[in-house]
Length: 182
Image (tube, rainbow, N blue to C red; front, side, top):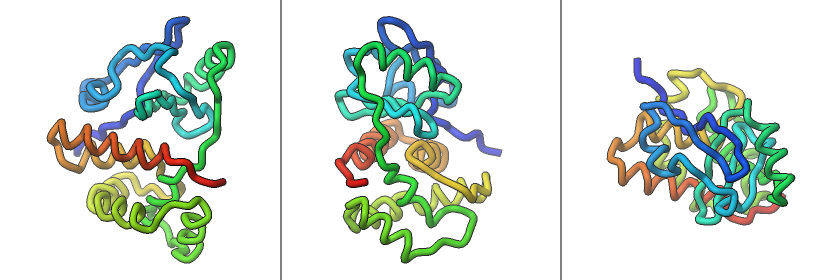
């Protein structure tokens, strides 16, 4: 059975920033994010998302293990870093891949309400069709997929080339970082 390449880091919150600890299966993620993230590189975070997300000034997103949620929020608050709840556009984009019946009309309405262009949705679903179907067959997820799941699916079942992984990761981060309405 294939090991899933989760993009979620164990982290230590320090005065200087975040130290990310990666498993060997997370090589692409470790290369993309690195092991040291100074607070000066952090634009904002979303401690309430699943998993918590740290958005860096250069557009990258660091996913942090949920057990670090409180320490992350406290440190960011004391440093004046915004803890914002962004709409999870990836949850709406990936909704058709859940192991449950979907309401396509409601999903299109949600995406439209968020302001996600149809071409973005079509491109994302086309790029992720096979990796997400394989992930669903393996996990039988029926409740929710999100940004980290798109990265997991591609890292596990997509193109194994490091450059392709990095390009895909930059693209998913750019889709998540757009200014969407609530």
